[in-house]
Image 1 (cartoon, rainbow, N blue to C red):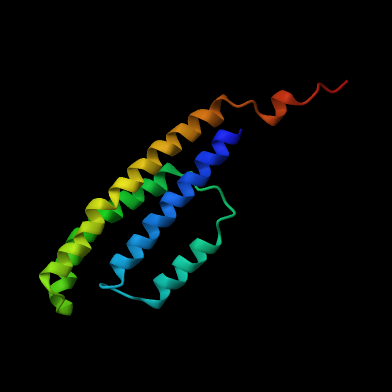
Image 2: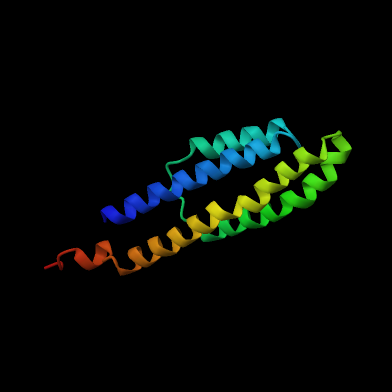
Amino acid sequence: MGEDRALLRRIRVWLAVFIVCLVLSGLTAFPLVTEVRLLHEALTSWAAPVADAWAVADGMIACAGIIPLALICGPIRGIPFGWTVIDMSFGVYGVIPLLVVRRMIKRLEALTEGAPTARAVEPAAG
C-alpha cells in the first residue's frame, strides 16, 4: 500500500512539472485569462487521484499540437524563429515526462488490481 502512494505522489510531481513547462510554453502564444483560471482550478483540486491514462494520452496529443501552433503563431505575433524553436521544444520534450507518468500509471494499475478489495477483507456476516 505504501508503494502505490509513493507512486501516486511521483505521478503528481511529474504532472506538476509538465504543467509548469506547458504554461511557460503557452505564455508566448496565448496568455488567456480563461485558460489561466482553468489551470488554477486544476492545480487546486489535487484531492482527486491523478491516474487517468487517457488524460496523459491527451497531454501527449497536446504536445504534438504545440509544434504547428508555435509555427503558426510565432510569425503572426512577430516572435523570432529561435524563440519559436524553443516553444516547439516543449512539445517535443514535454512528451518525455508524460511517457514516464504513463509507465507509472500502468504500474499503479497493476498494483491496485492485485490488492484485495474492501469487500474481500470484510468478515462474513453471521
